[in-house]
Amino acid sequence: MTTVQNQWYLYSDSAHDPFLNMAMDEVLLQEAENIGAPLIRIYDWDRPSVSIGYVQNYDAAPYDKYTVVRRPTGGGIVYHDNDLTYTAIVPAADPICKLNRIDSYHIFHEAILQTLGEFGLEAKLAPNDCASVDRATMQCFTTPTRYDVVADGKKYAGAAQRRTKSGILHQGSIDLEIIDCDKKLLTKKLLMAFEKQFNMQFIDFKPSSVLLKRAAELAEKKYATENWNKHKKFEREDA
Image (cartoon, rainbow, N blue to C red; front, side, top):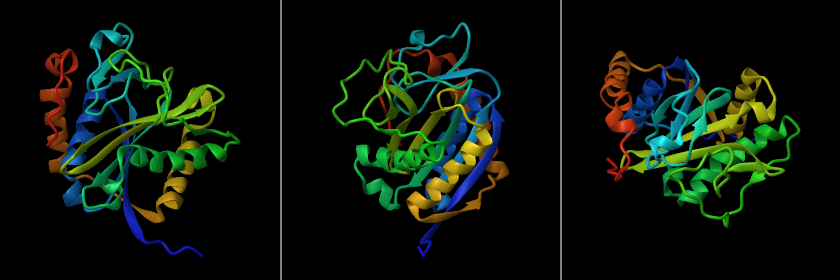
């Protein structure tokens, strides 16, 4: 019998607008050291939305049909009208932060592979030598990269990361339409796979009123603004 070595936090969040969703992730990353352990946030979107990568062109997104928000992480266009979205916050002191970038993606996607296997899907990690793409215009679920989970030429799941002195922000998405399964069941299986992959148990996380207020303010002052979402040239300034 495997002995559980540690505990992670599970933040079972509700549906929010796209701007608050991104603001919440950034605030959680800022608070990673104070939180003191890795945290998984499961959340939803209150409207059909699209998130674009940190350096993407806003014009590449279908802004006439979806609410568009720029992520604090990289990657391409991700549709959030039929997906399971999760975030992992890893404090800088955790061993995961010592992994190189590819391995830090793959350690989370190994849990995705376990999850998909529960539904009879034989997916695999995309090879490290995937062809390079134009990240300014790429669409994540039609342009697999070396960080993704794929099968039969289709992309099942992808993620994007940001690393700062506070730790790692890992934002992931699993396509429900391709998998064709119940979201609640998929979430349950995913959390079980995370526990197995990282040899840990979840304990509930409840954000403080102060944290919620900070996220709401950041959403209004940053993520909901045209200056953030439509700016065509970004230079990363990691905190």
